[in-house]
Amino acid sequence: MDRMIKTGVAAFAALAMTAAVAQAEMRETVVNIPSQGVNMVGTLALPDVENPPVVLMFHGFGGVRDELEIPSEGKGIFAYTAAALADAGFASLRIDFVKSGDSDGDFADTTLEGQVGDALTAYAWLKDNDTVSDAIYLIGWSQGGFVAATTAGRLAAQGDAPQAVALWAAVAEPEPTFRALLGPDLFDAGLAAGDEPVVATMPWGNQIALKRPFFESVVAAKPLQEILPYTGPLLVAHGTTDVIVPYDAQQKYIDAHQGDEIAFTREMDHGFDIYNDTSDLDDMIAATIDWFK
Image (cartoon, rainbow, N blue to C red; front, top):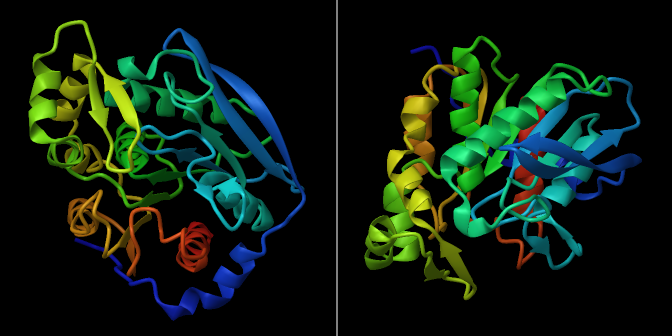
């Protein structure tokens, strides 16, 4: 196995300072992309660069395209990341999966396979977009990391692999992760449900309704197998204090992947400790940009 494994450390400090103050001129446009027969909404962010490379970003479970708001910044993690990417000369497209955010559909009807389909559709849309180059990169956070890994593998199997992939606190084993997150009794109830949704109370307090196809899609999802065809550059970032997606998911992705890798590790939670400050997030963004370059 030919691989290069590094650990994200202080070498990225200077780049992190750049990410923290990223305020490049950037044009953002809300775009509408047909997917699953309905409308999928995204935000296309373009730097002041002609035909830039582009990063496609996938949000997490129950999230939206801007992602969790950073208290000190007043903007979501992905919106914040888009600004840093633009400062480094990258365009970006962050999408609301169908049945999430501003996209059409009811979240209760969401499935993991449907989200992978949305990701492939967004990738093809970027390929046909003449404002960006064909150099496409992927970032996925949490469940979006599962989507990024699976999408990268399927694209690679078709001979159309992305330039590089960054997995941020990515789900590696969907069924055990969601059983722990939602509770085993509720998960089993979801698998046995009829047409009516079951209602899950999340660890952070909000309630989410989900139907049986979601639970079936979780059982069927195998990202550690799906990623195998992808042998391009892979960054796997994870916090050692993550209680939502176990920290050992990082090593599982590294073991599954055949190719160059970088392991970025910090003592941070699933949200990159943004309720304290943005230092870990800034370091991770900077490491991701450096890896993409």
